[in-house]
Length: 149
Image 1: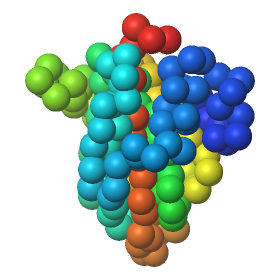
Image 2: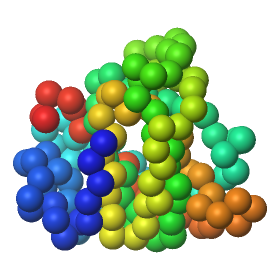
Image 3: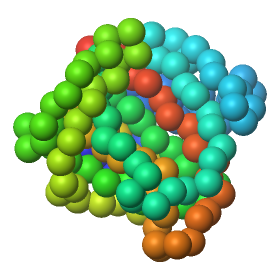
Image 4: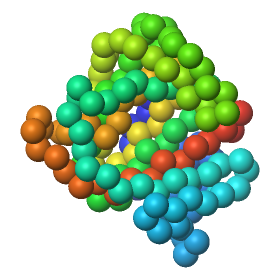
């Protein structure tokens, strides 16, 4: 896991720099859109309302590192090392690893900040920051091939 403000992206890896440059480009997709960034990186823009923790599931990935960037709103993301959880079925076609367990950490992700989640970081996303208070969020997730790190 790596947490940083987008202004610090220049201090990160080339893959993260490429994502941040694309985020501020004219070719950035609109809400609900997706785009190829280059070098095998793709991005997905989504808009949703945050959920209670009981409605969220754990996930992890093997082929991609997720770079979550909040465009508006805020959400809580819970994190569990895959080695500390119980791994379920792996869905190779969508790079989705089912995971069960209890959170080891949580991060509140706000506009202007980014969170990089590696294959060892199972995560629950779209969570309410304050229980019972749903928030509208617009977020982009960059799917970065692990070999770029």
